[in-house]
Amino acid sequence: MPHARFIKADLERILRHGAEGNHVVITDPVDLERLVSFLPDVGEGKSSHWAGGWKTELIIVLTRKNGETVVVKSDLDAWSEGRGDWRFKPEFKTFLEDIFKKAQDRKQSGIPGT
Image 1 (tube, rainbow, N blue to C red):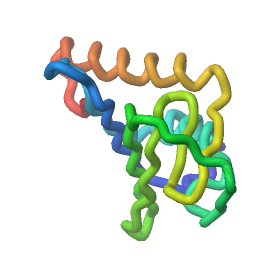
Image 2 (cartoon, rainbow, N blue to C red):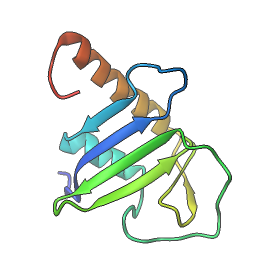
Image 3 (tube, rainbow, N blue to C red):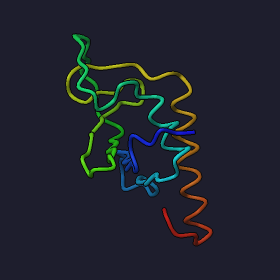
Image 4 (cartoon, rainbow, N blue to C red):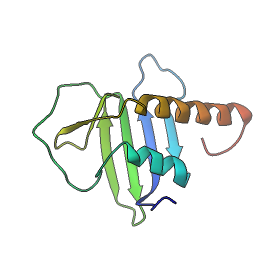
């Protein structure tokens, strides 16, 4: 059972040329927990000396129960809160594509919540 550190995640893909389907809101506790599993210790103030000069391709805004937010930026290989970089597990990209596809399918079906 997810421990619900966060109640919502807004994911914004930085796409070029006005592509559709670049924003997803996750509120499902299972999907949220899976997302957070790719971000160990997110929102806990950890830092590292490793940092790269990559371009942001994804912005994740995690919302806590009390309304506070944690902003994570990523190039899809690594993620950062601004105090160092951490590598994603290889399966993160598959998870991300599944989440965006699920949202696109819901939108095409006329189901709210996308």
